Length: 269
Picture 1 (cartoon, rainbow, N blue to C red):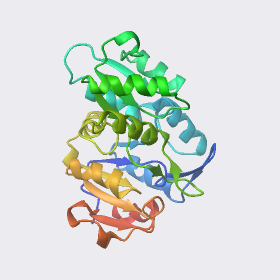
Picture 2 (cartoon, helix red, strand yellow):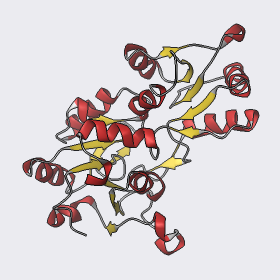
Picture 3 (cartoon, rainbow, N blue to C red):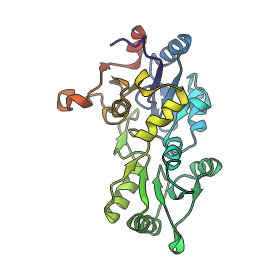
Picture 4 (cartoon, rainbow, N blue to C red):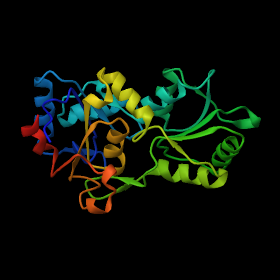
């Protein structure tokens, strides 16, 4: 597959452009060169990470410090795509969140109405991102809100994502699973892969999703996101799907191309 006719790009972050080892980011060889080549071609690109412990601007700053040419507005996360989802609900939805302090501040600054659901107050949606801590009281309030009709939204519902030293378990998925079990509800993903995520990447790049290539390391997140939007999809083998046997994946869910690392797409641009 060639990518010279693609009009824009969405790259995953962890396992695709960088590996994360604690607080340290290690740029994967060739990542900087690929981003530079896309920029030199005059085509826009964005990064979409399901990380939700910090505002998008914090991810952008971290990536710049690691050596990647990323501007604040180029980073998409579930904290941005959940806004696209909530904007389609009527009224001024009240959201009971599971967030870090900095993520809470970001959503409040964006105008999202956050509530704690205490004393029987109305809740329209429960949104689970990454949280450093929670307790049974908060989980019970969330489950009761969902039983009463609130939507259960989650940034991601996969169990883990790629780290430099192996999979990093998702706390958000753990919290979401607890609320889903107690309430009997099926969570709605608003990060990758989801239609809300497709909408924010189209808006950022000012392109139709069919004109975009999605490149990432996870068949069930990045490739699935691309298929929702009918984008071109490229799987890189430097992350969570490194050893995945694609013959066991239904054909319609497979990537359009598979490469050993992001550096391998340079000659396809």
